Amino acid sequence: MSSGSILHHTLTTLGLPSSQISVYFPPKGSNIFDKSTENVITATAPSYIFVLDQGSRKSPPLASHEHTCLVIDHHFASEGGFPENADYVTAYDCPPVATSALLTYNICLPLHPDLEEKISWLCALGTHGDLGSTIKWQPPFPDMTQTFKQYPKKTINDAVALVNAPRRSAAYNVSDAWDAVLSASSPSSTLENEKLKDASLEVRRETERCTHTPPKFSADGSIALLTISSEAQIHPVIATRWAGHLKSGKLEIVMCANEGYLPDLVNFSCRVAKVAKARKGVEKVDIIKKLEGIVEGDADLRERLGESFARGHKEASGGIVGKQEWEELKKLMGIGEAEKKKMVDKAKKEQKGVQKNTLANYFRKSTKV
Image (cartoon, rainbow, N blue to C red; front, side, top):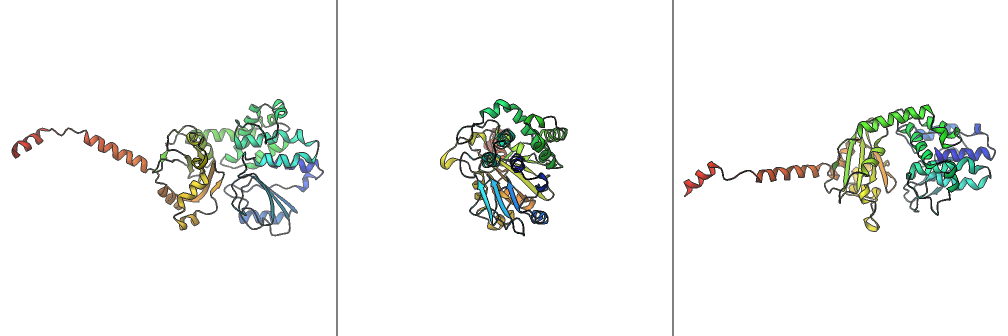
C-alpha cells in the first residue's frame, strides 16, 4: 500500500494522468506468479509494469505482450529469483534490510521537489508496518526527524494497524485500504475511515478468539506450533504474539498454522522466538533455512510442498501447503512428541512412587522363606 502510493504520487506529480495508471491486487490466496495474474495483466496490456512488495520468485514474464517490468522487493530471493526480462531492486540479504516502501521512497524522492511532503509519511508508514514501531532510523536509513515532528510515531503506528486490517479480514478487501491510503494527505486521515475501523474490529475479535490456543512442540523443542481455524489472516499476528511470550532455552521458532483460511490448504506463519533473537553467527536463527532443512531428506515431499513453502524473510517466513503435505511436515518435525514424552515420563515417575511394601508382598516373601 505504501510503496504503491509513493509510486502513484510520483507518476502523477511527474505529469502522468491517473487514468493511465491501473492497479491490480491478487485475490485472497493468490499471488502475482499465478496464471490468473498473467491473464489480467495481459488483458490490460500495460507498457510498464511495477511489482511492489509481492515476493521474489523466478518465473516467466508477467505478461505475454511486450512490456518493461521493474520489481521492487525485499523478500528472500534465490539466484535468478525474479520474473524473466524484469529489472529489479531488492534489499534482501543487505542488512539493515530496507522495506519495499523505503526502497521506492529512495528511488522516487529525487525525481521532483514537491514529492517529499507527499511521500515521506508513506515511507514511515510502510517501514513501521514491516519492521515494527521500535525501528531505529539510523544511517543508512534516511533522516526522518522532520517527518516524525510533523506526524507523531503513535499516529503512524495507529494508521499501520488500520491499513493492515482489510487484507487480514475474511473478505480480504484490499482495495479499501488502497483507496484510504492513496486519498490520505496524512496518517491521521486514515484514522476515521469507517471501512478500516470495521475491518480492524473484525481482526481484533478473531485474534482474541484464536490467540489462546495452546502450543505443541517439536521433538527437539526448537519449534512451537499453534493450530487455529479462521477465515481471517490472523496467523501472522498470533505467531508474532506468542514469539514474544514463550520462553525456553531450546526454542527457536514459533509457528501458527491456519487450517481455515483457504479450502483444503494450510497457511502458516513463522517468527523467531524472542528468546532466540540475540543469537549471532552460526547460531543465528534462519527460518527459511530451518524449514528447508526439515524436508531436505524427503525430495518427494519437498516437491509436493511447492513454491509457496518457506517464503518471505529469514526472520519471518511461512507458506501455503496442502493439508496432506502439512500432516507429513508435522510428522517430520515431531510435533507433539515432546508432550507425549513428558506424559510417559510422568506416568513412570508416578508408577515408581507406588508403595511396594504391601501386605501381599509381605506374605509372598514369608512363603519363600
